[in-house]
Image (tube, rainbow, N blue to C red; front, side):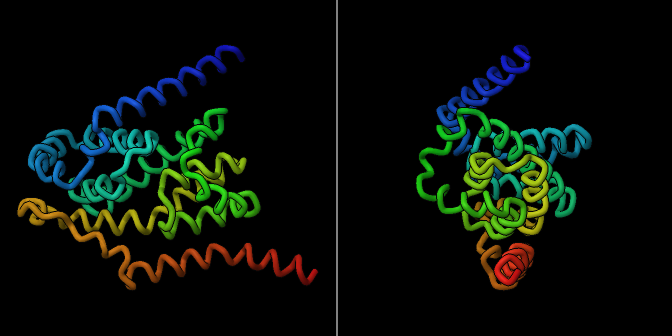
Length: 234
């Protein structure tokens, strides 16, 4: 038991050190479309030369970025589409994002959770009641419509005492649609980056994309509405 506790404390300390180092070294700014454009040829060559190691390396980087709460998830997802194609790249991004979110969730369930999320202020309190009442369906709706920062939705369920299994399931299912949209954008980025331009990510806010996401989110909330209607008219 002591060894397990000591191991958990060591993991937390390592994560905190990695967070501080990542921000101090400017790694947050390194995840950008200009950086992707500069290294595009090198990355494509690496993927071609290492067809097995490259996907593993990509998932590891994505997991670490999410666990460290670094910005640039859209860049990483588009990079997955660029390097591996829409379907494989999107699938790898989902795995990396889910793994990173689970890791951050587990860390946030320790005494460091309130400290990690303190600067979020009222945003946490705004979504916390819904997570405490209807964890899976509420989180699924939050994941489907990216109205809140990804790192915030990773941390808040831990403070709401949500169980790991529904958290992981809602995260995995909820990020699927938007992830594959970004991966499909990334699959066509080669010429855009070569021309020195950044992609237009406003597609995610277009009615053709946002409409179905909102519909899916509302559908995920139906069990909550049905349960409350039964209680009210029971």
